[in-house]
Image (cartoon, rainbow, N blue to C red; front, side):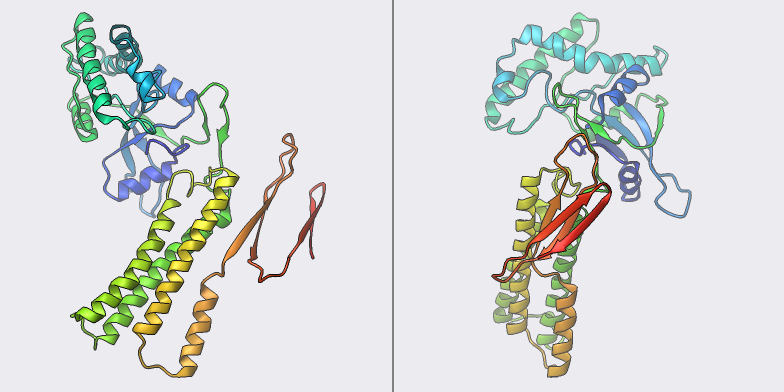
Length: 373
């Protein structure tokens, strides 16, 4: 998880229960990274929060990227290509490899004869010219090997995997430190961008609920399709070609909805750390997902209907309409004065049918009055 803005120990505990053995993170505040650098390095055991009634172990071996997931001082492909290999290899070795050597030496009381450093070579739009980029990486790897040998190390710089890295780290038989707690809130490390990213659990609550609602609607529609298709086929799953085509058409609508919903799984979407302009697009996307699901249910009703009394049908339709939200728009009001910490107010309104609905908000101190017009 190299891009979420901060990390919660709940995540570590959940990943442990899912069977993960290690965790790689990145975006934690520079103050945290400085403490790691000045103590036992960027490898440690992270104890997760308790998520079950039992006191079972919920910790994961963790590696925090010590700087960022690109090469130092390269924010684009062109800036990487322009680096002079001889001087740049010194920069990379000092920023990426030397801190790892120092940390392992400290933890092993200078007894370790081997070191493993994890370098990351990526960023947004980095590999648009992949062949050229990999050629430059190959060149840098050779230069890093030469730099290491000049410093007295038998160095190998190779393409590898996260799995191989952790296998190498564990083979050193070193006892690593234990960390308890969250890496929250996250503060941007870049000069001029020192903003705090907060609100994982407290902002944009309606959007997060809407994401959950669309997911539930997707799963419910899948279940409805399965039940209706089997019932239509005499409780058999051996569908003929005609019925298979109908089912495929309905599944296409559900897949379209899933693809729309999946966009909200971006680390800026589900966490609520996106901008207001982006949020408007997210609502459009989720409403489009609901439209696909409505079309899927219409197809189910028209092609996979089963005998049922009109009274029962009307009752079920009213229940389902109540459970599924109508198309919504969200309105957010904030105090524009940046030096006041005023709680954000969110209101959800049904989309009007050609009529104008106005909402007036009057605020005086901590008192807010909402007047519908």
